[in-house]
Length: 268
Length: 71
Image (cartoon, rainbow over all chains, first blue to last red; front, side, top):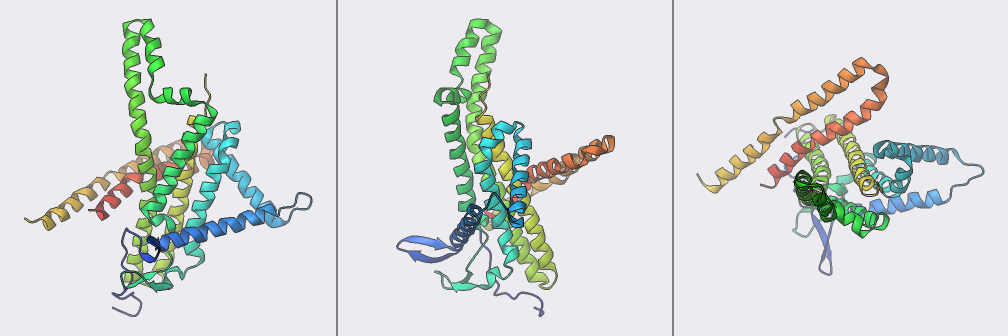
């Protein structure tokens, strides 16, 4: 090992997060600490936004409002319909901002894993770790968005109209009146509706694993880069990880907003 | 052949599914470049859509990586 390589006592990276302490019998992991810190940062952002003035805005306020208008525009383009996008932007915009902040923190605080603490198993673990590099956090995001999408659909369209998108019994009965060909079409649509139900569940896992896999792969790349050449290379790997994390945050936001728009469409 | 060998072989076969990902990315990029060549004003509009499409294509590679690390 030369002087510019991390030695063998570097943190070995596992997919499971490292448990720091136990509160009662609840394991507190380092990603949980990171999630709490992120929430505190978003809370500070909200406090700052609440102090915006309408009459004489400051420049930072104008810049922030321009960024929010850009986000609004982006979701309007993804959804296609500006009025529907207005309803969707609060939740998906918040999600995108939160995920972007998650990815920005390890670049803003580059000595993130220098703070170590002696964990539960006895060896040293890093105190903070990027939040979506834990499957639980990514699954929480994606499952939460699933719940939000269904509650939004139930609220906007109604229980019957939402369920009959998947279990298409009224359409089946209606197509039976049209003759044999239309009945075959109706049966096919019924099975397609059931498949859509399964694909909804698969979509939860696909969103979760996409986010988790990208961030985790970025961390592994960073560890490999640190172990091989610790001077100039990790900066580029950090930057690449930031780019990938930003793109994944945008992709997550657009997929969730497309699904919300599809559920919220009161088409006739 | 014991179970360790089979596990390593399974890891290798799981990673093989990453073979087609660069071809998929190249197809997306090819069609975007063709469209920009025909109509250069679409460049700004197509760029962000291309990024999202490439991220969706790379999802399969990420699934293979996750499977690699959990076998």
